Structure formats: structure tokens, C-alpha cells
Image 1 (tube, protein in one colour):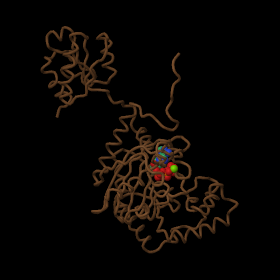
Image 2 (cartoon, protein in one colour):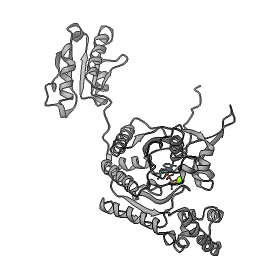
Image 3 (cartoon, helix red, strand yellow):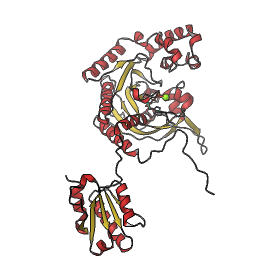
Image 4 (cartoon, helix red, strand yellow):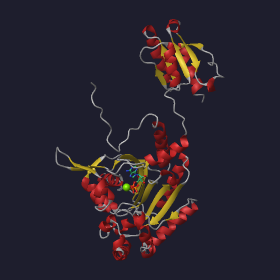
Length: 431
Ligand code: ATP
Ligand code: MG
């Protein structure tokens, strides 16, 4: 009787080898792009004090109200939360280590986030984000630069049809005046509000405008617009940002109902959206959060950042990628066990010394069976160290791919073990 199987936690995915190359390609391009704009990596812990998110994100947000994995540490009674996002953590770390002491800081992070949501396409309980935070910079130059940087990222990844939506949330006093009018308007429409909206009417009415409920769209469309409550400085910031984007030839649409889910945003907010992802079409959200550093106990400083949902980007990349599986290795080394194993192992080590990716056959199998494995591995060359070869200090080399059928190993050839590594390195690494 076998033991019962234990499955992964619902909404938390394994990344299997077949998908890994796409993730690695994404990660490399993202890091490269961030570095090319002067962003440096920061890694913060997955666990933070629950208070960080309650204060940082706001009590009346989806995340804090119902999505956080929070628990009390049974060993010392601390209230902890698995990070649902990483802006709060990065700002906490920047304050704790005085990163802003000598001037602004451009930081990026990448890693898993945790939200207790209903799992569905594009929405998981453990998911991954790469994000950037420009701390101590007031914009709109850096707001525009982050957006341009994201446009570049989609380009290098080969993603088509990713749209940019833009809005401004103004400053807190402007929002307060708009909020009072908005509440008055929504109270007048009380019968038409859904349950969520009624609950938020007095706590976070701006979020009602962000509703996905179809029945409320008309009501939302008629609501007072924040844009009409903005003062000179906020309007100028928004206008300059748009001007910078136009001059960088980044297309955008102003969406006055774009508010973002978190309390900490002000002025610039933006989202990059794709129509190819179904209901979860937002790839990336970002904007300015000038009040957060002070809210979390730091010296007041402006900031702007964004976060990209990696699973959603990977889904778009997968559409483009086709079925080109990455080979497991470049050279597969076959042997006949016994006295042939040690020379085969030494040969494999020398090939690796030359920078090649090598699988040395493990376990016992006929040369025929090993050749099948070699072929399935995607290797370009098979190196055979059989009994006869080992006795003569040579190896037999055979090209496995039709693309290599023109080269000297289209027919199996023997090569002295001493010359094997440089010979194959020359073929596989011509420059
Ligand atoms: P949504 O409206 O989809 O719930 P959000 O406003 O909660 O998004 P943010 O907190 O802004 O999302 O996170 C930035 C990005 O992270 C999103 O645009 C999305 O691509 C991704 N993301 C957020 N939540 C999830 C999740 N549960 N699973 C997968 N990706 C997610
Ligand atoms: Mg959400």
C-alpha cells in the first residue's frame, strides 16, 4: 500500500522545467532593462510585520480586508504577513537602512507575492512580480521614464498589443473635495449600489469607481470626475507627463476611472493592459506614492514605482514562443560502465572546463539505449567512450542534429581524448 499523495497548495504553482526557459528569458530581459536605467536590486524578506501592510496599503483595500496570509507566530506571538506586494517592504527597508540619506534611490525587486484570492486564469495565490521604485524623485520626468522603460521591456520581449492607460489622482486635499461630492452623488443613487459599493461608500468611495460590476458601469460613468477638482500643480504634472510620453512616442489613453487598488497613490497612476488575457488583462500597475515614505516613518520624500505580474507576461510570451524546447545539454557522453566510466567522466569534466553543457550518462544501459537518451536530450553531439575507445584513449564523436550533418562528425569519427574538448568547443563555440 502506497502512502496518499500530498498535492501543492491551491493557487500555488510549480514551475516545471518545460516552462523554465521562458521564465529565465523574461527575468534576464527584465533585469537587463532595469539595469540599463540605473536601477539596482533590493531583496527583502517574504515575511513582514502585519502592521506594515495595514498602515502602508490602507485598511479599506481588497488586499488588507481579505487577501492577506496573516498569522501569529506561535513561538513569540508576533503578527506576521506573507507579503502581498513589495512596495511597502522596499520602502520599509529604505527607511531602515537610510538608503535615501545621500540622495535618490532607484531600486528593483523580483519574487513571489501572496494573496488569498479565488484562483483562476491570471490570478493565483502565490504569484510573481518584478517591480521598481524610484525613491526621492518628484517627477514627472521619472514617472515618464518608468513608463518608457516598461514600453522598452514589452518591445524586447516581443509583446504586441499592450496598451497604456493613464490617470492622475491629484493630491489628498483635492481628492478630499472630490470625495465629498462623490459621496453626495452616490448617496443619491443608493438603490443602485451593489453590496461592495455600499460598504465602501463612506470608507473608500474612490474605489467604487474601479468596480468591475457590469450593472454599476452606467452609474460610475455619471459620477463626478476627479479631474475636475484638480489644482494647477496637479494638472501641470499630468500635462507634462503626457507631453514627455508623446515626445518619447509612447501611445496612451487617459482613463479618468483608473484609480488603482491601493490607498498610497497620488498624482500619476498607470496600467499596462492586454486584450489577450481574458478578464485578468492588467500586466502592470504603477504610479506615484509621495506620502508613503512619511507614512511609514521616514523623512518625507516623493516616490514613483510599478509592479509587473510575471505570470501574465509569461502567458503572452508563450503565445509567441511556439514549441521550441530548450535542449537539456549540448554534449551527451555515453560509456559502458566498468573501466570506461572514469575516462568518460574525465572527458565530461574537460568539456565543461571549455564552457559546454554536458550530460554524462548515469546508470547502466546498452549503448543503443544511451543513444536514444542522447537524442532525446537535444544534445548536438554524442561522445562515446566504449571499451575499445577507452583502451585506445579516444572517444567516438557523432553529430546528432540534421543541422550539423554537414560537419566533420556527420559520420562517426574518433578523436583522441586529449583533443576532444577543444575540438567540440570549436564547433559549439565558434567565436
Ligand atoms: P487586479 O486588479 O488584477 O486584482 P491589482 O490591482 O490587485 O490587480 P497590483 O497590486 O497592482 O494588482 O499588482 C500588480 C500586478 O500584479 C497586476 O497588474 C497583475 O499583473 C499582478 N497580479 C496581482 N494580483 C495577482 C494574482 N493574484 N495573481 C497573478 N498576478 C497578480
Ligand atoms: Mg487585486
